[in-house]
Every structure is written in structure tokens, then in C-alpha cells.
Image (cartoon, rainbow, N blue to C red; front, side, top):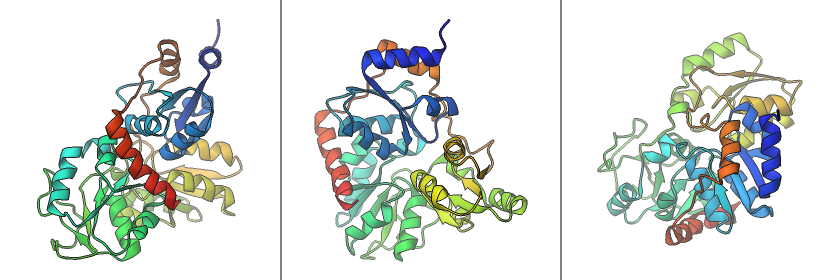
Length: 327
């Protein structure tokens, strides 16, 4: 009987398909993928290649981004229920309400958001380019959605005051905010979204690993809370982590992000050691929904196809393209 991996490879050839996987996916899913990377990196990769079918092993907003950048292709999400709690914390209506409170502000939208939210934004950003994106907008007021942690990281980097929304749009007031002064011309209005997986990483978890591995370099994702970020040696996106480790002379690393990335880090750097922070809690359930069986079924049935309505796709593409021009 053929192994499931062999069946997937046969169907992939038959469908002329590309399999791409986010850095947080299950080890065996990353192993069978043609490419692994962060969400925008994968969408851009898919857009440059010829395969008309793309199996996106990630979560829904990622597949939406791929569909926006490659509208002529068939984008398949092997598990239609693979979503993102942070992306779900804001919708187009909530963002429009926030824009009405601050009509003079520019909206910077983390790519970890729905197509509808991207369509309501002036520009997108990733965790690796967020500082450069905000800098490109000059000295203006910023609405940053949906991640309060990435937003506060950028505000700190640029020395911007953090502003509390006058009406939190149904969300709690951000705990990291410093004042409710809408008159501040360069203020950062932070929406109170967050990644539950990164929120579960605590300072005590970092300190425990540092005690066991005092020579290890601490890498943390900027989606982590400020107390965790303050304990890190480097604050990096997943793609930046992979590049940093390859170029670093260090041989030990404490990794404070979703546990899935450790597979890629170890595979690409077999002589180095990686220590996951709270591996029992730093797990994204949605990222683990896609399995080899679901990839096989997705190719067999050509499901589930992810599409974006043309007008929303057009507007969302504008916010993505404005980001890409910055680099």
C-alpha cells in the first residue's frame, strides 16, 4: 500500500499544484511542503511560480492574502476551520467605527487580519517591516490594528505616545496604553487585539530557560507581551529568526514563539541547539489543524477553495501593494 506522502506527491503532480506551509505547521506538513515561510513570504512566492493550484497549509487570512495576490489561481485551504483568533478580534465594522473617532489618522493593518480589514486600511505591515511602514507615513496619527503587542513594539521603537481609543469598539482598553489624549498629533491608537498563543508565553518561562541555558540567545516574536520582549536578546519575525540563526555564531537559542518553528530551525541548523519556551502552551491549535490526510483530501476534492470578493480584493490589494513598495 502506498504511503500517504506518495499519494500526495502523485496528486500534486496530477493537479500541477504547489504545497506551501507556514513555519508553525506540524513537522510532517512542513516536511512535505515545497516551501515553508511566513504568511506574506509564502503568498508572494506562490504568485511568482507557474503552478495554477496552491495548497496553503496555514490559516484562513493567509489563504485570503494568497488569493488577493494571485486571483487567477486556485487557492486551497485543507481545513476550512483553520482560523486566527487575533484576526477574528476585529472586523470591518469595528475598524470603520475606530476610523470615525480619528478621521485624521492613518490605518496600519497587521497582515494577520481578514481581507475586509485590509480593505479598510491605508497600508499593511508584517512583523518584520512594521517599523519601516509606520516611518514611511511620516509624523501622523496612527491607528494600529489588530495586535496591541506588535503595535506597542513599533511605538516604542519610534518613540511615539500610545493613545487609548475613546470608545474601545467593544474591546477592553489596552493595558499597555499610556494616555487617553486624542489630540496627540503623533499618537498610536492601539486596537486591543492579541495572539492568544504568544500571550501564553510568560516572563517566568523565559527566565526558567535562561537559568537552564545561560549562554543561549533569547529570540522572541514581537507579538509577545512587553515583559517578555524586554527579556529577549532579539525581537524577530519567524523569517528573521531563521535568517538570524543561520548567520549567528551562537550555538544555543531560546525560542519564544509558536513551537512549530523549531522544526525548521533544527532542520536548517543541525549543529545548533534550540530550546522551546513553554512548549506545552506555545501551541496554536489552528496551525495544527492541517494534517497530511487533509492535504491529500484537499488535492483529491479540490477543496476548500478560498476566494475574496473582487471589490474587497481590489482595495485590500492596494494596502498590500503600498507596503510592498516600501520593502
